[in-house]
Length: 492
Image 1 (cartoon, rainbow, N blue to C red):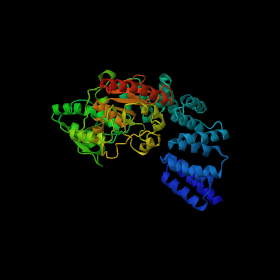
Image 2: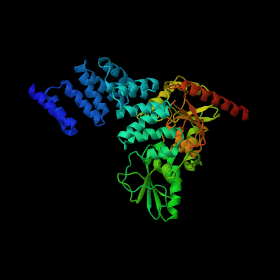
Image 3: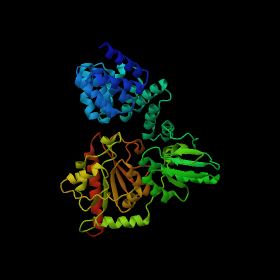
Image 4: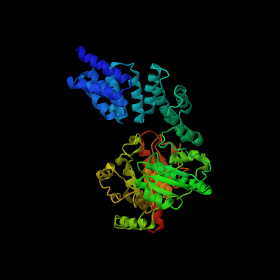
């Protein structure tokens, strides 16, 4: 027993010293001798959580609580791991068990607040996080979580105070800078927001381009976020190319393979467009696409919103026109409306921004509309489960965003949740109705029904968290009126 205890103490010492590899090896050796040793199972899971492997943390700490269910700390850490693994629904009952065992467990209080925040239960989340903050005043992670909830409740001054308190302790905290930046961006204070956004991680060590003359330098523009962000901010690339050309420089745009064909067609005449590889192409200065608004000092009234700035090839448009005509019903009349109801399931906020497919029923019931599904991934099959939906999915033969753009060019309207295709429709000037959760992404601002980034977008917002019924009911009523007007104008 003493030998096992000594081994566990040594493993814990490695763990506390930050020697993750040595600690993992030591825990593994103990479990080879005693597979159900609860402290080792628990700490093995904690180590995995600390090194970013939330799924394995859930597995190991779950074994620990089965072996010793009457101890609070493993339940608390299991709940936190479930939250980190994007499973807040499972985290809540686990954390309630932890708090039943130890009502003063600040880790469990904080994890409960963070889990309820992920479930869009903002008032409940704030109460739990305020309890955690009272238990450990000044704790940076608790203040950051509390500030984020307060921001999403539009209690901006209180949120700012939380973020400022974190930054007073850790002035370089990227998480606090970014959380505060979002609060400014969503209110339309773009210049302050862009400044805060510069605290995110950057890929390259070359000097950044900050908006001035480039001389004869080669400027590398590159993606550092998702597809939608790249589509939104690539509008600035021709402006950079114009500045570079004045000094005899040039621009290279590095992008993802799925965006290459579209970007190369639309931008390749003024810059070199390359597919992102393991190593960047030779360059003198660089700028991530998302840093371009900061470099240009973009304010709310100065957004470059001339569209279209992206467009598909005419041959692609003609090919997809024929394919879509083959999907039309017998009469082949009425507006053609594309549907996307789910985003990337791995996105941290997907449970709030994606729509349960059954909520589409009021929209699908609008007469005289030719619906087509542009949904990708596992969610694409969900529409088939709606009795009588009969909506064809046209994405099976899509190779990249250039094909998607050609489909959009053949639609009268796109109805979508907040995902990359909304940006593509906006960049093309295609009419698009964007369904937004109660707490929107920062770029859609607050309360307004339009977007200064994309003139062709109309925003439909949840009036309260989770209320897709109202947002979709409103959209269905507007679509019904528009479809009726179109039918009358065609004499149908």
